[in-house]
Length: 155
Length: 76
Image: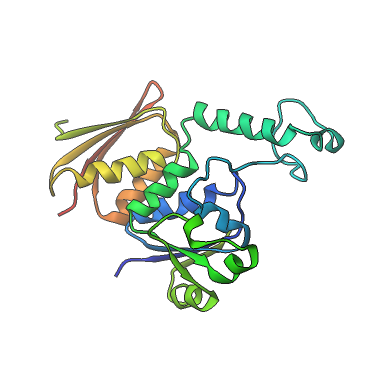
């Protein structure tokens, strides 16, 4: 019987989109059975268009910046877009996969993507906002799978 | 060493070499051999782990001029 990986994806920024999709796609390649439960801001990662994911240096002091930037400067309009642009450029330059590519790899490999229904209601997300081929459920749905999983991680 | 298919994973970063390798292995038959060339230094450990976990046989692993070459035999 194959090993199982259960992930919770709770964040919806460009940087934090990577860990769940990298782990899930790789685990699937290693013949794991994988489920990702998307809750709160993580739900954003299931939207049809995820090309507008952003990363913010604000409140993120460990983020490497080309020049030191005080928080007061980071709040200026356009700083978030600039940081996002720089990050995307780096991602391309270093041969790192795009989030879309990793999500597609997950879907192709049969990773089960589950949207948290409660958060959808909370944020007024509609099913048509999300990609096809996903499932909908709640905490019990996740726990049913995670209870028998070999690895469970909250991201 | 002889091989049936070659995968160029140079310039790709984790986890792309593994994902592409998985795909390439799906395109050959059991017992056939895949050659993978990568530049990601992390791929050395990753390919060993991949083969150990999936049962494909890592026939050889060579390093030279910043490139890593893996010869993998598809499991039966």
